[in-house]
Image 1: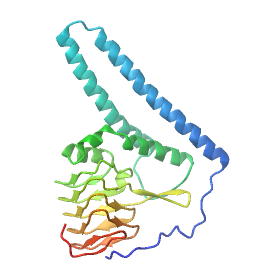
Image 2: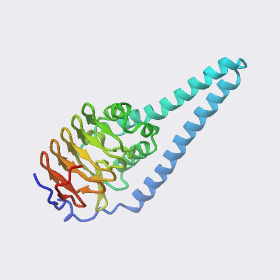
Image 3: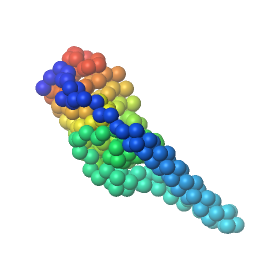
Image 4: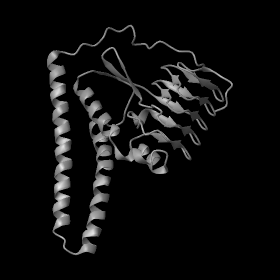
Length: 241
C-alpha cells in the first residue's frame, strides 16, 4: 500500500462526444423531470392544506398539522430511496457516457441526494441507517458528519469506529473525458478522515489509517493500516489527527 498517485486507465481514451440530439434531448428531459418533481411537491402541499383547513377543532387541527408535517418529511426522505433503486438499482463500477439515458438516471439520483433533507441529521445514527438503505456498507459506531451525501452508495464501505469529518466528499464518481466514472471507496476499521477532504474513486484506507484536513486521495491511492497522510495528493506525515 502506498500514497503514490496512479494515472487513470482512461486518460489515454479519446473523449466521448455526444451528438447534438442526445445533448438537447437530455437537457429537455432534465427540465421536465424538475417540473414533474416540483409539481408533485406542490400538489402534496395543496392536498395537505385542504385536509388541515376543513378541521375546525383547534386540537384536531394541531394534530393534523403535526401529522402532515411528519408525512411530508417522510415522503421527501423515502421517495429518493425508492427512485434510486428504481432508476439505478445497485451502483457498480462503470463508465457512463455523458448525456446518455444512463447519464440522465445518474443525474436524477444525484439531484435527489443533493437536496435530501436527511442531511440535517449528518453525524447521527439515523444518517448511517439511511446510507445503508441506499446500499452503503457502514459499520458500527461510525460517525459520518459530512452533509455532502455520497452518491454511489453501494460502492462505499466504512469499517467500525471510523470518523468522517464535515464537508468530506465521498461521491463515488468522477468526470473523465465526457464520461462519468464510478468506483469504490473503502475504509477499514478505526479510520479518520479530516474536514473538507476528498476521497476519489478507487481509493482505500487500511485499519487505523488517517488523512488530514483539506487533503485528497486521488484515484488509485491507498493508505496502509495505521498510515497517516495529508495534502493533495496525500503524502505521508507523522501528525496524529
